[in-house]
Image (cartoon, rainbow, N blue to C red):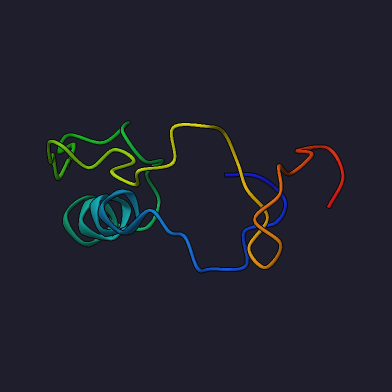
Amino acid sequence: MNNTNRLISSDNVGYAAILMEKELNGNNTLPGKGPIVCAFASTNLGDVSPNTRGPRCEFSGQECDQEKL
């Protein structure tokens, strides 16, 4: 994603894994370091948009500069 993205993006499965590990291992363990390590794996969650010509600005349709808005 570039700097023009105004939509919400999140890592729900990563956050769910951290919460599950905290529930099972206790709050004193770091993620991935306790006796139980959780992961919620999925496939084919990549970018499925037809955007094959690079980023485009939302309203103008012109090419976007990723460093500047």
